[in-house]
Length: 213
Image (cartoon, rainbow, N blue to C red):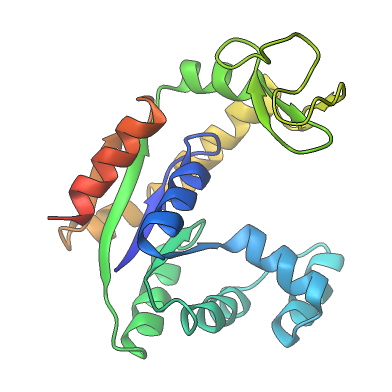
């Protein structure tokens, strides 16, 4: 089963993708992560991407499609597309990539979020600097203040882009980039929506219900 997960940064796509990988053997294809990995490994596609990024330019659809194609070949249990496609041209390219492998897109699932609540969710999050365990100022504090529940470390960190101005900019970018592809998939009857502000388990159950139909 191949699906697209849509939702702004912080909506929980990564969390849900990890669950689907664990429970269904699907592969999470996050274009941002894949590009960074390809560049780090020095693969042929990664070298092309590195040259483009070092020149300060956007990575072309052709490079991203090549990267997706490479990973699709090893995604026998199904793929979760995250961050691609973002335009109708990319959506059409994805159809071709899948068709070349006798596959079709099964669902486009959008995690619906409330912007104000999402800002609070993202701005308040932090993690253990040693083991990476995740916490939140309001929703998930360490049991003992200043000490990681998992490894006992005393140092924590926050992502530099987890601030209100950046989050609102990313929300606006998401709306601008996602708006063009939703009608494309709605016309095909593929779009389903779930409440991304619900608890992690509730969101997972809603996604499972869609995939099990």
